[in-house]
Length: 306
Image (cartoon, rainbow, N blue to C red; front, top):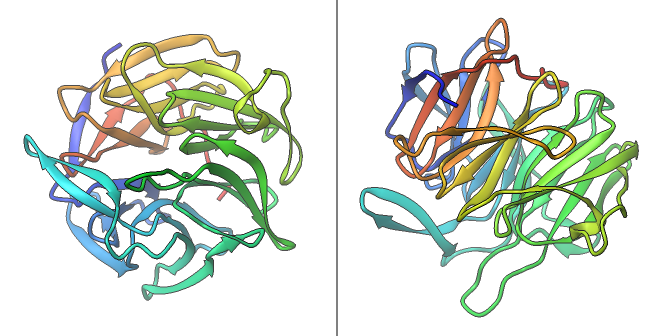
């Protein structure tokens, strides 16, 4: 499957977490530079705020602020002109959930722990229609060990773990009806799902020994890692893949719909966000080369809750 790709911006420090803002501009995090950047329609860039650590995922809250998953920072290496993370930063002190007020760049830390367990590396986030949000805490690679990952939920009642353990949980998304939660695992290149019985209340159990108690959806064939994802209006998942670089398209029944090969652009296609008047602009982060592209998508994407 081929799609038309147009370069939106370049010169970014491992961009991820694309969010279409109300004024039509695009916000991305720059994990390597510890900042959030706004990209205007003409491609000009403006730093909204320096937030420190490693801002990773982002989502608009009901009040218009950006809620950020901050992984605490990585060490970095250069490989054939590509920038790649290679473990926890030397000054790593844990992960956090942050709130960024876009108008003035004010940043505040909302969470550094859930259920009395420090956050390791929050990665991706999705809001439900009730105004709460789910996020993945991916875990961190250290020299001799790695942390287990989990999924957490935050609402007015507080924050709690709702699924664990998972192996590097990364992308997270809700179905169009909000009755399913999906999550990807990077290391296994698998996707899992849970029924949403109530906000923050998940039920899995259909798969024996499923990660985090979840139900198995799919696995990527060949040598690949899964990253973040977005959902089409019809319920298909669009999953960014690394190494086998592109976007895997999978139906809610696990059927493989297709694969968009973007290996000529970047080995690390990490995130995708839908926008445009007809929701057929797919903004993808090509992280290793520090670029963002806009793809003309064959079907409309799902409008997020906020």
